[in-house]
Length: 300
Image 1 (cartoon, rainbow, N blue to C red):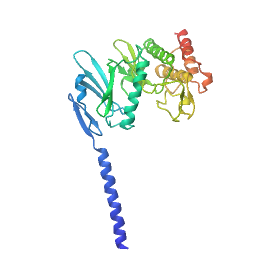
Image 2 (tube, rainbow, N blue to C red):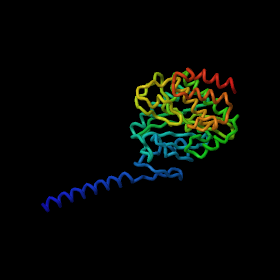
Image 3 (cartoon, helix red, strand yellow):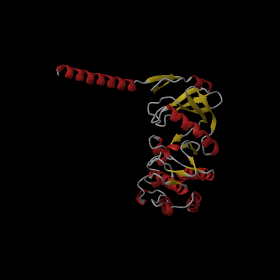
Image 4 (cartoon, rainbow, N blue to C red):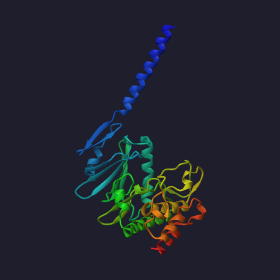
């Protein structure tokens, strides 16, 4: 019996050692340094190709999308590099999924080309990954996770109305091209406070109609998502995008998810229009994004 107990104890100890070793292995990070800027990865990755685009001046390595991004500058211009395949520390997907998603994004950017959408310069396969190169935009992100979010909220009403108009016009364009805006939220909005220019920077999950919810809870920020984006089997359509645009209005002019009039900073009529857009009952919303836009602009 003693031998059996000792054997079982040794077995438990061995499993514990293996588990601890696995945990330690998972926690080991590789620190990379490019042009004096450091960042961490779970595994090593070859970044030699970056030098052909210029010198790195910014690194964006905390996205849960799995993409690793760089700002680079050469004698002619600044560029934004988006890389799939590197094992980032915050990634919620594996390398193959990230590569496949970035590759599928290429056609979306090409079909939705617009003055308010970040321009794509080129894209290509790289060793163990995929690269998309975009124009650099000298703006700040409106995402709630960034300090610049509060700068957006504090802007004068007229300036925010101009930003919102740009957002609406881009999504009218996207709708005309047959796309539904999936995962649009304030993190997709950039703004240059100096030139007062708005830019959309991420359309990675936009999909061509028809779109059916095959996930249950879809990709996106709860603050912007329509009820049908939580309902397995529901159709995500133009009325869903009307909801997203209404939710965007409440983020810019109101209290976000607190959609009370007390939190609203615009006109009473604009409040009523935005409130209709975010009706839980899809049939009670504006049927098209164009009709929503016309109602909004009539009161501007």
